[in-house]
Image 1 (tube, one colour):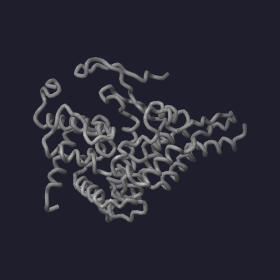
Image 2 (image 1 turned 90 degrees about the vertical axis):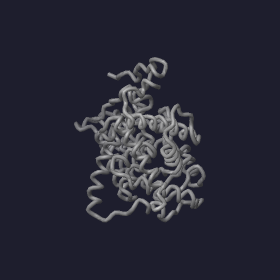
Image 3 (image 1 turned 135 degrees about the vertical axis):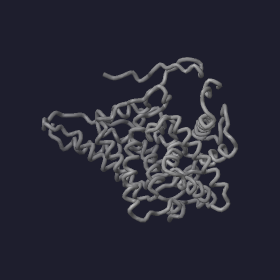
Image 4 (image 1 turned 120 degrees about the vertical axis):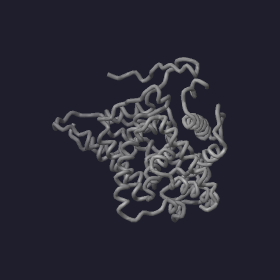
Length: 162
Length: 208
Protein backbone atom coordinates (compact mmCIF):
# COMPACT_ATOMS: atom_id res chain seq x y z
CA UNK A 1 0.00 0.00 0.00
CA UNK A 2 2.81 2.37 0.89
CA UNK A 3 4.40 2.00 -2.54
CA UNK A 4 1.16 3.07 -4.20
CA UNK A 5 1.07 6.34 -2.28
CA UNK A 6 4.81 7.05 -2.30
CA UNK A 7 5.85 10.23 -4.04
CA UNK A 8 2.31 11.62 -4.28
CA UNK A 9 1.06 14.86 -2.75
CA UNK A 10 -1.93 15.11 -0.42
CA UNK A 11 -4.52 15.73 -3.15
CA UNK A 12 -3.31 12.78 -5.19
CA UNK A 13 -3.36 10.48 -2.18
CA UNK A 14 -6.89 11.58 -1.26
CA UNK A 15 -7.99 11.09 -4.87
CA UNK A 16 -6.38 7.65 -5.00
CA UNK A 17 -8.05 6.61 -1.75
CA UNK A 18 -11.40 7.76 -3.15
CA UNK A 19 -10.72 5.87 -6.38
CA UNK A 20 -9.97 2.64 -4.52
CA UNK A 21 -13.11 3.06 -2.46
CA UNK A 22 -15.24 3.64 -5.58
CA UNK A 23 -13.81 0.51 -7.19
CA UNK A 24 -14.92 -1.58 -4.23
CA UNK A 25 -18.27 0.21 -3.94
CA UNK A 26 -19.26 -0.10 -7.59
CA UNK A 27 -18.07 -3.70 -7.74
CA UNK A 28 -20.29 -4.45 -4.74
CA UNK A 29 -23.26 -2.74 -6.42
CA UNK A 30 -22.67 -4.79 -9.55
CA UNK A 31 -22.95 -7.91 -7.40
CA UNK A 32 -26.15 -6.59 -5.86
CA UNK A 33 -24.65 -5.71 -2.48
CA UNK A 34 -24.91 -2.29 -0.79
CA UNK A 35 -21.20 -2.01 -0.12
CA UNK A 36 -18.10 -4.09 -0.31
CA UNK A 37 -14.83 -4.44 1.51
CA UNK A 38 -12.38 -1.70 0.67
CA UNK A 39 -8.73 -1.58 1.71
CA UNK A 40 -9.08 2.16 2.26
CA UNK A 41 -11.91 4.55 3.00
CA UNK A 42 -12.07 8.27 2.26
CA UNK A 43 -13.30 10.87 4.75
CA UNK A 44 -16.94 10.65 5.81
CA UNK A 45 -18.52 13.26 3.49
CA UNK A 46 -16.90 11.69 0.42
CA UNK A 47 -17.81 8.18 1.49
CA UNK A 48 -21.37 9.18 2.24
CA UNK A 49 -21.99 10.99 -1.04
CA UNK A 50 -20.34 8.20 -3.04
CA UNK A 51 -22.65 5.66 -1.41
CA UNK A 52 -25.61 7.88 -2.12
CA UNK A 53 -24.77 8.51 -5.78
CA UNK A 54 -24.09 4.83 -6.38
CA UNK A 55 -27.51 4.07 -4.91
CA UNK A 56 -29.66 6.96 -6.15
CA UNK A 57 -28.25 8.24 -9.42
CA UNK A 58 -30.69 6.86 -11.99
CA UNK A 59 -29.77 4.92 -15.09
CA UNK A 60 -31.58 6.05 -18.18
CA UNK A 61 -33.01 4.10 -21.03
CA UNK A 62 -34.63 5.45 -24.17
CA UNK A 63 -38.09 4.29 -25.11
CA UNK A 64 -38.36 0.82 -26.59
CA UNK A 65 -39.90 2.36 -29.69
CA UNK A 66 -36.76 4.44 -30.16
CA UNK A 67 -34.53 1.43 -29.51
CA UNK A 68 -36.22 -0.66 -32.18
CA UNK A 69 -36.46 2.21 -34.68
CA UNK A 70 -32.74 2.91 -34.38
CA UNK A 71 -31.96 -0.79 -34.61
CA UNK A 72 -33.86 -0.90 -37.91
CA UNK A 73 -32.07 2.15 -39.21
CA UNK A 74 -28.69 0.69 -38.30
CA UNK A 75 -29.72 -2.55 -39.97
CA UNK A 76 -30.42 -0.76 -43.23
CA UNK A 77 -27.11 1.07 -43.05
CA UNK A 78 -25.34 -2.20 -42.27
CA UNK A 79 -27.05 -3.92 -45.20
CA UNK A 80 -25.86 -1.13 -47.48
CA UNK A 81 -22.32 -1.51 -46.18
CA UNK A 82 -22.35 -5.21 -47.01
CA UNK A 83 -23.16 -4.71 -50.70
CA UNK A 84 -20.06 -5.22 -52.86
CA UNK A 85 -19.07 -2.02 -54.64
CA UNK A 86 -17.90 -3.87 -57.77
CA UNK A 87 -21.28 -5.38 -58.49
CA UNK A 88 -19.91 -8.91 -58.46
CA UNK A 89 -22.67 -11.36 -57.69
CA UNK A 90 -20.81 -13.60 -55.33
CA UNK A 91 -23.24 -15.39 -53.01
CA UNK A 92 -22.74 -14.74 -49.36
CA UNK A 93 -23.91 -16.26 -46.14
CA UNK A 94 -25.51 -14.16 -43.44
CA UNK A 95 -24.62 -15.67 -40.07
CA UNK A 96 -27.54 -15.91 -37.69
CA UNK A 97 -26.20 -16.05 -34.16
CA UNK A 98 -28.31 -17.94 -31.67
CA UNK A 99 -28.35 -14.79 -29.57
CA UNK A 100 -26.89 -11.49 -30.60
CA UNK A 101 -24.55 -11.14 -27.65
CA UNK A 102 -24.49 -14.68 -26.38
CA UNK A 103 -20.88 -15.26 -27.34
CA UNK A 104 -19.75 -12.56 -24.95
CA UNK A 105 -18.77 -13.44 -21.43
CA UNK A 106 -21.26 -11.00 -19.94
CA UNK A 107 -24.98 -11.22 -19.32
CA UNK A 108 -27.00 -10.67 -22.48
CA UNK A 109 -28.29 -7.36 -21.30
CA UNK A 110 -24.88 -6.04 -20.36
CA UNK A 111 -26.31 -3.19 -18.38
CA UNK A 112 -25.01 -3.10 -14.87
CA UNK A 113 -26.94 -1.95 -11.84
CA UNK A 114 -30.41 -3.43 -12.19
CA UNK A 115 -30.95 -2.78 -8.51
CA UNK A 116 -30.72 0.94 -9.06
CA UNK A 117 -33.31 3.39 -10.32
CA UNK A 118 -33.89 3.48 -14.05
CA UNK A 119 -35.47 6.17 -16.13
CA UNK A 120 -37.13 4.63 -19.15
CA UNK A 121 -38.19 6.97 -21.91
CA UNK A 122 -38.30 9.83 -19.46
CA UNK A 123 -40.21 7.99 -16.70
CA UNK A 124 -38.46 7.21 -13.45
CA UNK A 125 -38.83 3.66 -12.24
CA UNK A 126 -36.96 1.00 -10.36
CA UNK A 127 -36.16 -1.94 -12.59
CA UNK A 128 -35.68 -4.15 -9.55
CA UNK A 129 -39.27 -3.70 -8.47
CA UNK A 130 -41.40 -2.38 -11.26
CA UNK A 131 -43.46 -4.51 -13.55
CA UNK A 132 -42.09 -2.54 -16.47
CA UNK A 133 -38.56 -3.50 -15.52
CA UNK A 134 -39.48 -7.14 -15.02
CA UNK A 135 -41.35 -7.25 -18.29
CA UNK A 136 -38.43 -5.67 -20.07
CA UNK A 137 -35.90 -8.11 -18.66
CA UNK A 138 -38.15 -11.05 -19.53
CA UNK A 139 -38.66 -9.70 -23.02
CA UNK A 140 -34.94 -9.27 -23.57
CA UNK A 141 -34.03 -12.69 -22.27
CA UNK A 142 -36.72 -14.49 -24.24
CA UNK A 143 -36.43 -12.49 -27.42
CA UNK A 144 -36.16 -14.83 -30.42
CA UNK A 145 -32.82 -15.05 -32.12
CA UNK A 146 -31.97 -12.34 -34.63
CA UNK A 147 -33.06 -8.74 -34.16
CA UNK A 148 -34.14 -6.24 -36.79
CA UNK A 149 -30.56 -5.83 -37.96
CA UNK A 150 -30.23 -9.53 -38.77
CA UNK A 151 -33.73 -9.66 -40.27
CA UNK A 152 -32.94 -6.72 -42.57
CA UNK A 153 -29.66 -8.30 -43.63
CA UNK A 154 -31.51 -11.52 -44.43
CA UNK A 155 -34.08 -9.58 -46.45
CA UNK A 156 -31.35 -7.96 -48.51
CA UNK A 157 -29.66 -11.31 -48.98
CA UNK A 158 -32.90 -12.86 -50.26
CA UNK A 159 -33.32 -10.14 -52.89
CA UNK A 160 -29.82 -10.59 -54.24
CA UNK A 161 -29.32 -12.97 -57.18
CA UNK A 162 -27.20 -15.98 -56.36
CA UNK B 1 -3.41 -11.59 -38.49
CA UNK B 2 -5.19 -11.79 -35.18
CA UNK B 3 -3.36 -10.56 -32.15
CA UNK B 4 -3.33 -12.46 -28.92
CA UNK B 5 -6.38 -11.75 -26.81
CA UNK B 6 -4.38 -11.99 -23.63
CA UNK B 7 -1.38 -10.16 -22.34
CA UNK B 8 0.87 -11.25 -19.50
CA UNK B 9 1.49 -8.33 -17.18
CA UNK B 10 3.32 -7.82 -13.91
CA UNK B 11 1.30 -6.74 -10.90
CA UNK B 12 3.79 -6.87 -8.02
CA UNK B 13 1.28 -5.39 -5.58
CA UNK B 14 -1.23 -8.10 -6.49
CA UNK B 15 1.05 -11.11 -6.19
CA UNK B 16 2.92 -11.20 -9.48
CA UNK B 17 2.10 -11.57 -13.15
CA UNK B 18 -1.35 -12.48 -14.42
CA UNK B 19 -3.16 -12.68 -17.72
CA UNK B 20 -5.67 -10.03 -18.65
CA UNK B 21 -8.07 -9.74 -21.53
CA UNK B 22 -7.25 -6.67 -23.54
CA UNK B 23 -10.73 -5.78 -24.69
CA UNK B 24 -13.86 -7.54 -23.52
CA UNK B 25 -15.61 -6.47 -26.74
CA UNK B 26 -12.95 -7.91 -29.02
CA UNK B 27 -15.07 -10.75 -30.39
CA UNK B 28 -18.13 -8.56 -30.91
CA UNK B 29 -16.08 -5.87 -32.62
CA UNK B 30 -14.30 -8.33 -34.91
CA UNK B 31 -17.63 -9.90 -35.83
CA UNK B 32 -19.12 -6.49 -36.64
CA UNK B 33 -16.09 -5.47 -38.65
CA UNK B 34 -16.41 -8.65 -40.70
CA UNK B 35 -20.17 -8.33 -41.04
CA UNK B 36 -21.81 -4.95 -40.23
CA UNK B 37 -25.11 -6.70 -39.46
CA UNK B 38 -23.43 -8.05 -36.33
CA UNK B 39 -23.07 -4.49 -35.03
CA UNK B 40 -26.46 -4.94 -33.39
CA UNK B 41 -24.92 -6.78 -30.45
CA UNK B 42 -22.70 -3.80 -29.66
CA UNK B 43 -25.63 -1.44 -30.17
CA UNK B 44 -27.87 -3.32 -27.74
CA UNK B 45 -25.07 -3.61 -25.22
CA UNK B 46 -24.22 0.07 -25.09
CA UNK B 47 -27.48 1.81 -26.02
CA UNK B 48 -28.54 2.61 -22.46
CA UNK B 49 -25.07 3.78 -21.48
CA UNK B 50 -24.74 6.15 -24.43
CA UNK B 51 -28.29 7.41 -23.97
CA UNK B 52 -27.69 7.97 -20.23
CA UNK B 53 -24.56 9.96 -20.93
CA UNK B 54 -26.33 12.04 -23.58
CA UNK B 55 -29.34 12.68 -21.37
CA UNK B 56 -27.27 13.81 -18.38
CA UNK B 57 -25.34 16.15 -20.65
CA UNK B 58 -28.18 17.51 -22.76
CA UNK B 59 -31.02 17.37 -20.22
CA UNK B 60 -33.57 16.75 -22.92
CA UNK B 61 -35.08 13.44 -23.91
CA UNK B 62 -35.34 14.19 -27.63
CA UNK B 63 -31.89 15.77 -27.84
CA UNK B 64 -30.46 12.73 -26.07
CA UNK B 65 -32.15 10.37 -28.52
CA UNK B 66 -30.85 12.39 -31.44
CA UNK B 67 -27.30 12.36 -30.06
CA UNK B 68 -27.57 8.62 -29.39
CA UNK B 69 -28.69 7.96 -32.95
CA UNK B 70 -25.86 10.03 -34.43
CA UNK B 71 -23.33 8.33 -32.17
CA UNK B 72 -24.27 4.81 -33.22
CA UNK B 73 -24.58 5.69 -36.89
CA UNK B 74 -21.10 7.25 -36.80
CA UNK B 75 -19.73 4.25 -34.92
CA UNK B 76 -21.19 1.79 -37.43
CA UNK B 77 -19.98 3.63 -40.50
CA UNK B 78 -16.51 4.17 -39.02
CA UNK B 79 -16.10 0.77 -37.39
CA UNK B 80 -13.56 -0.27 -40.01
CA UNK B 81 -11.22 2.42 -38.70
CA UNK B 82 -11.43 1.30 -35.10
CA UNK B 83 -8.28 -0.28 -33.72
CA UNK B 84 -8.04 -1.88 -30.34
CA UNK B 85 -5.61 0.03 -28.21
CA UNK B 86 -6.14 -1.46 -24.78
CA UNK B 87 -3.15 -1.26 -22.51
CA UNK B 88 -2.36 -3.65 -19.68
CA UNK B 89 -2.75 -0.72 -17.31
CA UNK B 90 -6.40 -0.45 -18.30
CA UNK B 91 -7.07 -3.64 -16.39
CA UNK B 92 -9.19 -6.67 -17.02
CA UNK B 93 -12.56 -5.92 -18.57
CA UNK B 94 -11.54 -2.57 -20.02
CA UNK B 95 -13.04 -1.90 -23.41
CA UNK B 96 -11.30 0.33 -25.85
CA UNK B 97 -14.34 0.00 -28.09
CA UNK B 98 -16.43 1.55 -25.34
CA UNK B 99 -13.88 4.35 -24.94
CA UNK B 100 -13.93 4.92 -28.71
CA UNK B 101 -17.75 4.89 -28.75
CA UNK B 102 -17.92 7.41 -25.91
CA UNK B 103 -15.38 9.64 -27.62
CA UNK B 104 -17.83 9.78 -30.52
CA UNK B 105 -20.68 10.39 -28.08
CA UNK B 106 -18.75 13.13 -26.34
CA UNK B 107 -18.09 14.94 -29.63
CA UNK B 108 -21.69 14.50 -30.73
CA UNK B 109 -23.03 15.77 -27.42
CA UNK B 110 -20.64 18.74 -27.46
CA UNK B 111 -21.97 19.72 -30.87
CA UNK B 112 -25.56 19.40 -29.62
CA UNK B 113 -24.75 21.45 -26.52
CA UNK B 114 -23.33 24.22 -28.67
CA UNK B 115 -26.60 24.28 -30.58
CA UNK B 116 -28.56 24.06 -27.35
CA UNK B 117 -26.74 27.04 -25.87
CA UNK B 118 -28.20 29.18 -28.59
CA UNK B 119 -31.68 28.18 -27.45
CA UNK B 120 -33.45 28.05 -24.08
CA UNK B 121 -32.83 24.74 -22.32
CA UNK B 122 -34.94 22.56 -20.09
CA UNK B 123 -33.56 21.82 -16.62
CA UNK B 124 -32.49 18.28 -15.85
CA UNK B 125 -34.85 18.18 -12.89
CA UNK B 126 -37.67 18.13 -15.41
CA UNK B 127 -36.72 14.50 -15.92
CA UNK B 128 -38.02 13.62 -12.49
CA UNK B 129 -41.35 15.36 -13.00
CA UNK B 130 -42.12 14.18 -16.51
CA UNK B 131 -45.33 12.39 -17.24
CA UNK B 132 -44.70 8.83 -16.15
CA UNK B 133 -46.73 6.39 -18.24
CA UNK B 134 -44.80 3.37 -16.97
CA UNK B 135 -43.96 4.59 -13.48
CA UNK B 136 -46.01 1.79 -12.01
CA UNK B 137 -45.01 1.84 -8.38
CA UNK B 138 -44.95 5.63 -8.18
CA UNK B 139 -42.32 5.58 -5.46
CA UNK B 140 -42.14 9.21 -4.40
CA UNK B 141 -39.19 8.74 -2.09
CA UNK B 142 -37.20 7.10 -4.86
CA UNK B 143 -38.06 9.93 -7.21
CA UNK B 144 -37.09 12.57 -4.67
CA UNK B 145 -33.74 10.98 -3.87
CA UNK B 146 -32.93 10.53 -7.54
CA UNK B 147 -34.02 14.06 -8.41
CA UNK B 148 -31.87 15.52 -5.64
CA UNK B 149 -28.85 13.55 -6.82
CA UNK B 150 -29.55 14.61 -10.40
CA UNK B 151 -29.70 18.28 -9.45
CA UNK B 152 -26.46 18.08 -7.48
CA UNK B 153 -24.65 16.48 -10.41
CA UNK B 154 -26.16 18.97 -12.85
CA UNK B 155 -24.62 21.88 -10.94
CA UNK B 156 -21.08 20.56 -11.38
CA UNK B 157 -18.83 22.18 -13.99
CA UNK B 158 -18.09 20.40 -17.30
CA UNK B 159 -15.48 17.69 -16.89
CA UNK B 160 -16.25 17.09 -13.20
CA UNK B 161 -19.85 16.35 -14.16
CA UNK B 162 -18.84 14.18 -17.10
CA UNK B 163 -16.33 12.22 -15.01
CA UNK B 164 -18.92 11.57 -12.31
CA UNK B 165 -21.55 10.44 -14.83
CA UNK B 166 -19.11 8.10 -16.55
CA UNK B 167 -17.99 6.68 -13.18
CA UNK B 168 -21.32 6.25 -11.44
CA UNK B 169 -23.87 5.91 -14.23
CA UNK B 170 -21.80 4.15 -16.90
CA UNK B 171 -19.49 2.46 -14.36
CA UNK B 172 -16.34 3.11 -16.35
CA UNK B 173 -12.91 2.60 -14.86
CA UNK B 174 -10.65 5.57 -14.26
CA UNK B 175 -8.54 4.48 -17.23
CA UNK B 176 -11.56 4.39 -19.52
CA UNK B 177 -12.74 7.83 -18.36
CA UNK B 178 -9.24 9.16 -18.97
CA UNK B 179 -9.49 7.85 -22.54
CA UNK B 180 -12.89 9.43 -23.11
CA UNK B 181 -11.98 12.83 -21.63
CA UNK B 182 -8.44 12.91 -23.03
CA UNK B 183 -6.85 13.37 -19.61
CA UNK B 184 -4.41 11.42 -17.48
CA UNK B 185 -5.73 8.88 -14.99
CA UNK B 186 -4.35 10.95 -12.13
CA UNK B 187 -6.22 14.00 -13.38
CA UNK B 188 -9.44 11.98 -13.62
CA UNK B 189 -9.03 10.69 -10.05
CA UNK B 190 -8.63 14.26 -8.80
CA UNK B 191 -11.62 15.41 -10.89
CA UNK B 192 -13.85 12.76 -9.37
CA UNK B 193 -12.61 13.38 -5.84
CA UNK B 194 -13.30 17.11 -6.17
CA UNK B 195 -16.66 16.46 -7.79
CA UNK B 196 -17.69 14.28 -4.85
CA UNK B 197 -16.59 16.97 -2.40
CA UNK B 198 -18.68 19.55 -4.28
CA UNK B 199 -21.73 17.29 -4.34
CA UNK B 200 -21.31 16.54 -0.61
CA UNK B 201 -21.28 20.25 0.17
CA UNK B 202 -24.23 20.82 -2.13
CA UNK B 203 -26.39 18.09 -0.63
CA UNK B 204 -25.57 19.25 2.91
CA UNK B 205 -26.51 22.84 2.11
CA UNK B 206 -30.04 23.44 3.44
CA UNK B 207 -30.34 26.55 1.26
CA UNK B 208 -30.51 24.33 -1.84
